[in-house]
Image (cartoon, rainbow, N blue to C red):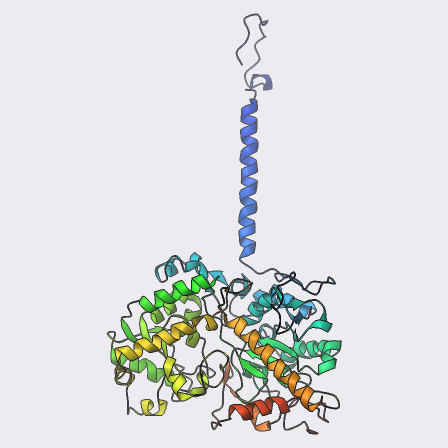
Length: 558
C-alpha cells in the first residue's frame, strides 16, 4: 500500500529481516485458501471414485424392520394380487461378508470389479473399444458383467420390489438370499480347500433356516433361492468329487432353486438366463436396441466364440473351429476364448455376434454356456447341438417342448453327422432362405426382454417383463399350484425334509478336476408336462430318514 505523504518516515531495515519481507495482501490469502480447499475436494473426489470401483460390505439395503406391511411403500390396489414376498435378513456371513471379501473369491484375480454396481460390473462406457461396437444411445445399458453374479442381481431386485413385505405372516413366498455360488466358488480351486470348507456355509445356513418359524410351517415348499453357479457345482456325491453337496442336504428337498443351469430331472431346479452385459434401464432402451440389431448389416453367415480343450478326447469345440476355418472369413469369424480373453473383452464378443446371422453354441464345461444368451441378445440365431443346451431347461424363458416352436428361433444340427464329416456347417446354414433367416432373427429379437436383467430396481416398465420378472411370476404360479394341491389333498404328515422322488435323476456328474463340472452323458428321457407336474406335486412328501437328500438313501412314506 503506498505511503501517505503525511506519514512519518520509517527507518530502513537490514536486508533479509522479517520487517523487510512483503506483507501478503488479503486477496492473496483468500486465493491460497481457495487453492487448498479445491485440492482437498479433488482428493476426496478421487478417493470416492476409487471406492465406487469396489463393492462395499453392505452395498445392499437391509430389509426394513418397521411394522408396515409394505417394505417399499404402499402400492395400488390389485398390484400384488399374486401375493407378497418376504426376504430373510440372513446373518451377513451368508451374503454381505462374501461380497466384502471379494478379493479372495477367485484365486487368479480380484472379483471386486465384477460385483460392483450391484453385480452388474463396471460400465462398458469406460472401455474405449466398446464405444465403437454399440450405438452411443445404448452404451449406458452395457456393463462388463461376469457370468456368476445372478444371486446379487436378483437379491437387489427383490429388496426393491413393490410387493415385498416386512411381515412374514402375510407373505405368500419367502426368499432366502444366500450367495451359495460366491461361497462355493471361493473353495473350488484352493490348494488347501477341503470338503468341509465347501459345505460349511451351506450347513450353517440350513441350520439357521430350518429353525425359522415360516420354514417350519411349510417345510420349505413356499421358499426359493438363487444359485449363481450351475447346479452341478452343488451336487457332490462323494468326498473326492467336485463342488459342494448343498442341494442334497436335509432341508433343501422342497426349496425351489433359480439356477443358471439346472438338472432337468430335478423338479426343484428352475433354469434362469445367465447374466449378459446388456442391462437396459427401461422398455424404451430395449426397443431401441431391438431396432438396432434388426437393422444391422450382418457380414458373416455364422460365428463362434470359444477355445479348444486339448485335454478332452474328441473335443467338439475343436470341430467347430475347423468348420469356421474351412468356411473362410467370407462366411465365418471366430473369437479365441483361451484364458480370460472373453471375460475381459466384451467388445470382441458383442461385435462377433452383431456381425453374424447365426452363432454356433456347443456345450461347454456343462451343457449350456453364457455365450448362448450373449448371442441371442445380439440378435443372432443360435445353432444348437445338444437339446439340453436350451430346450430342456429354460422353459419359462424360451419357447420349447414343441419342435415347431423351437425351430422359430433356433437351429438344431446333428453333431455326430458333423463330427464324421457327413455334413458341414456352411452347407447346412446356406440351406435356409433369406426370408426364413429373417423370420428367425425377428423371433429372437422379440425374446430379448425375457433374457436380460434390467439395471433399474423397478424393472423395465411399460408392461415389458425382464428375466427377473418372468422368474418371479413363475415362482408365484408354481407356489399357487402347490398351495392348491395341498388344500385339495391335505398337508403331508410328519416332518418334511429333503427328498428325491426319482433316485436316477441325481446321477452324479463327472469332474474335469480343474474348473467346472463335466456332465456325464445320459440317455435322454422325455417327460410329458402332465407327468412333470405330478412329480412336482409328489415331491412335497415326508420321509423317514433324516439323512442326505438322496433318493438312494431316503425312504419315502407316501
